[in-house]
Image 1 (tube, rainbow, N blue to C red):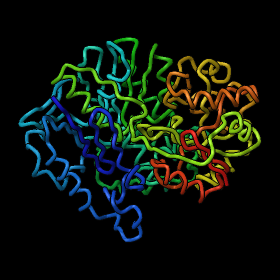
Image 2: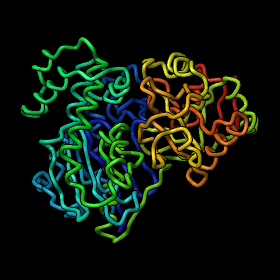
Image 3: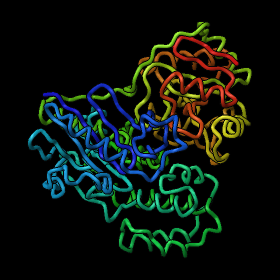
Image 4: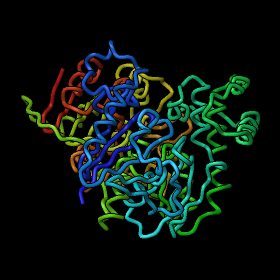
Length: 492
């Protein structure tokens, strides 16, 4: 039985057919897919109205006309506001009790928003049994749910609306409602504030609604660094209070937007033997989860998605790449755009759409933020480290292939990837995971004795580049020194 899936989210609708993960922002070229589904008009962004929902509505309607055998879907609160009349009204009454519950009628297959997160993490983990935490800012019926090893659903929405709180605090502090990752970059700069901790306790004691929280305007903002630091501690404390007692086995899977919080994920490794966080943990990965759910229940098939599941592009250049030369260029201070094969699922560049630089350079963070990324200088960069060496440099006990955990740096030899609080969001790389990426890190290691590179997403104030043309355009408009596209090198 053939399955197509679509996640009807507030911003970033995405689709999946078992091979191609269609993350819409990569093609519209608008972060978080705003304006909505303007896929044919990226070159006319100056004439589009970001508040125009009609493009989004037409995309949804066309996709629902494409029913083949099964169209599997899920939605976010607000994501179906203009197409409710197209959907069976029973889906709005649906309440799952177990992980594999579902609604299915007339070729339409439906599960809850948080079920799709949970399924995506669990299926890709390969665990036979696992606790699962699906924790998000907003869903359809829930904000946070937990599945025990017997796949029973426990609703934690009222106890752990952590994603909602981060979204509102990031908006309050000037980063926007979708800027929680920026606010998290401030965590290392601050210190604990009893005032802010009490504010967060008071907020969670009141009703959690989608309406604008006008009373938040009374919160003092005399130190945003302290607010961020305290919010992170508050998050960990609430996780320990409400999630730790539910532990039913040694394995844990985590998904949902809050699963981009690397401090939280690292903390879980102290309570669980194995912790799995997949690459596309936010709403951008939902279409995969709903596809996997339908494929398992209807076809009895366990479908693991690939990390690199975008499109692949043919590109022929004028000069073949020499990995040793590229590694030496990085040693000499050059910053390299690295474009290989299919793009990654999720919001982390994991070695196919990356910018690479020397992690030994103490000034590299400012250089890249100021001349290439054009973003706030307080935001850190991640190390991509050869898996066989990660414990020599980082105080953590598990590999982190998807750049999902933040841990302490043990060495003073890599200041370029060490955050102000002495941490780094690490990516561990082995040859099986990504051979070309492994090889370029290995060449740098041979020259310097340092088994890692600074790795950040290949973009400049827009979504990660998807096509060779976008990579070349970014190369030309920024201070990148060299660009590698598949097996070819471009120079300035």
